[in-house]
Image (cartoon, rainbow, N blue to C red; front, top):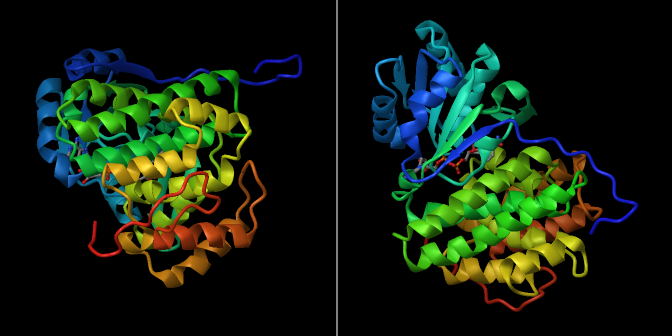
Amino acid sequence: MISAATTFVQEPSRSRVVFGSGAISSLPGELSLLDIQRPLVISTPGQSELANRIAAVIGSSVQDVYPHARMHVPVAVADAAVEFARERGIDGCVSVGGGSSVGLAKMIGLNLGLPIVAVPTTYAGSEMTSVWGLTGDDGKRTGRDAKVLPRTVVYDLQLTTQLPLELTVTSAVNALAHAVEATYAPDFTPMIGLTSQASATALFSGIQEIARNAADLDARAKLSYGSWLAGSCLEATSMSLHHKLCHVLGGSFDLPHAWTHTVLLPYVMSFNVTAGSSAHGRLATAFGGAHPAGDLLELIDRVGYRRSLAHLGMPRAGIDFVVDTVVAAPYANPRAVEADDVLRILEAAYDGADLLSPDKPTSPPETSGGL
Ligand code: NAD
């Protein structure tokens, strides 16, 4: 609510967004607007066919397709890509795929000062941020630099229809995590309140609808729309405990990014989204229930993707390391976080147990079987 005591600073997003079914046909014009004449198309190995298709849409100006992006951007992968881009004399990157493709384009952008056009095919949200990440022997480092913010983002719903349901749901929960942590961010603004709530609403209902019918293009539209808004929240606000935990877990144990978010988010929400807070009110409205953490866990369970950190392959012996690392680093959080709190959250998520302060009873997941 706005009152005489309200103060905030709001910066508009600096990314141009083209959204819609068939939106990739706009790519030649969008590259011209940025005066990119020798683009490099970047993807993960799994998306190389799509990257070739995008290269064909752009036309003969494409210098090459580089399908070597990897999750969490290992240093060696980044160095090789920067060298390749330098040798080919490119003047811009077109990333095709999820956060891994954008992540590699960002390292080229950062090192060579080149503009990026992002064509996202997951809901991770990296395309809307100026945050880069790089993983070396000493873990994952991140930083912010305006140079790496994609100048144009093209959301084409048709590119998400092949996203397997497992990645669809977990990636959408990854997006939801940005919206959730924005609701209690220290740099929250009224605009972020509207954006995060609209994002959470679209993502929560989009997950239910896509799980009922994987071919539902309207549900895909909701998920892309929600992930765009969530990515905008990620760019505009400071993330808290949940993102810190996922960052340390992903970088230290090479855990799958979207899955890590999906396992952890309900547990962190049950700690951070306290009843009576404005974050609780917004998320309760977005999810259509009175218990946001419990409602999310129940949704994840109902659509068949409730797992634990043990399922993801994290060693139990790593829990203490994560507690120490997360407690040692300063970051914003709506509640003070002690080592014991982090330990309880991690142990519960490790076992896939019920929520810490259950605002709704849930049953534990099956413990056998992999992902
Ligand atoms: P990803 O990009 O690695 O994609 C996961 C897998 O899905 C890949 O094998 C990819 O080939 C495949 N895939 C992608 N789109 C597909 C489609 N439409 N159909 C079928 N398969 C498809 O994973 P992600 O979860 O999108 O991104 C995770 C990475 O992004 C992590 O490294 C994370 O740290 C980073 N990230 C960064 C930011 C940021 O702001 N810097 C934000 C979010 C995520």
